[in-house]
Length: 312
Image 1 (spheres, rainbow, N blue to C red):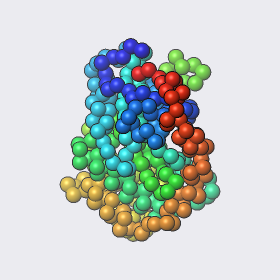
Image 2 (cartoon, helix red, strand yellow):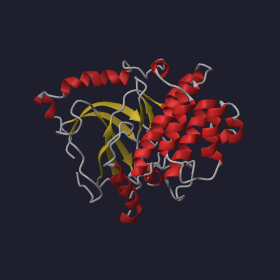
Image 3 (tube, rainbow, N blue to C red):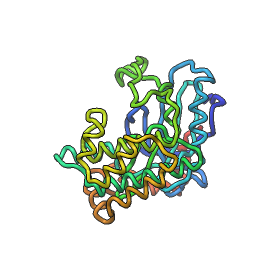
Image 4 (cartoon, rainbow, N blue to C red):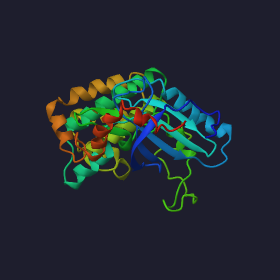
């Protein structure tokens, strides 16, 4: 594989199981790391994006810089980025932690399908955990830039993980497909929630998280309902916290740490949140994908696995 001087080397890995297509059309696969220091007891996820052909260095630079800044991030609530690379075929490959469970977007759909809403304790728990992860990133001058429900993962024990740091600049560079069977056809890039040229800062992330939490609490997309109307459906404490994020001008004291503390003060969480997460189909430890993880644990040591290393 001819590699452009774009980014860091990929870690060596062995394929385990394809997971299908992601929200941006990327191919997602479960793999096993084969290098020391690469989370030898846990699998990784490889995401492959097809970039538009013929991109110059200037067009790729924002993506390279964003991914480079994301690599050093270390926090329990952040899916670690282990490496990334672009080859001569304009294919971006990103290797990151595998996070068991389901996305917040999937959880929201499943709850709505039952004609119900998540509890406010659940909403506050998710928000507090993501706010803590954002605070850790912002402390290192890293902005996520694309906080959405499908970027947030819910684990079987109530753990919450924010994924895909550094990938926002890729949105304007991707090759879009009109149909999986016709990969050479390019479709227009979908309109994002915010213009891609809008400068990003820490408050951008916190405001986006506020919209995610309001949608989760009300069961309605933030774009389809006025913020003031949606806030009337939540308790006074949560209304005050989300209203400050979504309706008031940014203030210096509005940080991820403060948002985390405010959300934790709104609702006491505990075992009931874990039970609520575990009740979601596919979120528990016996989900189909996690079953592959259990089987893959047998692949950590045998030499036979190492013969299937993908060259990077």
